Length: 153
Image 1 (cartoon, rainbow, N blue to C red):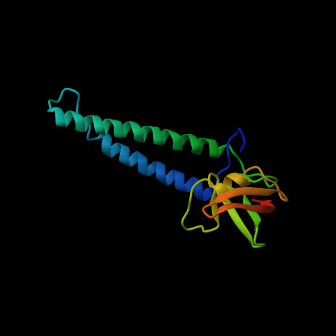
Image 2 (spheres, one colour):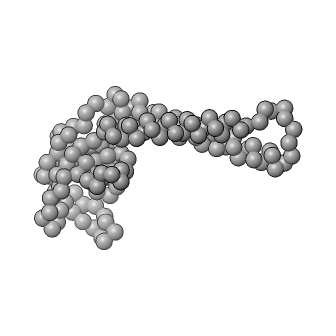
């Protein structure tokens, strides 16, 4: 990984924007249920109020994280075609000789079976690698190795 902004695919960016919109809607709904400070209530009401206030704070933190990632992605530019990074398309040859072209993404996507997240064992092993380099990573079945055949975007 680099110290600068990491590229993000258009699909992942759209997913983040959808999640952000959903979180803002949820935050608005929860915040609307918070009482005016002068309203009288019993201890159960106070506990419920505290729980909702904590939920708003959690949502605010999550919203801030996603907004930061979206800002970072907007200045990240296209993924490198020299080394594997988020957004790269990589052809990999596995130990059994099978080759597979995969996409390295930031967010899992059930609709993209060729997607490998950058924080998965294979994704972590591939980050920063170049064509011709071997990688080692762990699978549920034990250690595995693969060779980066090519890197493109």
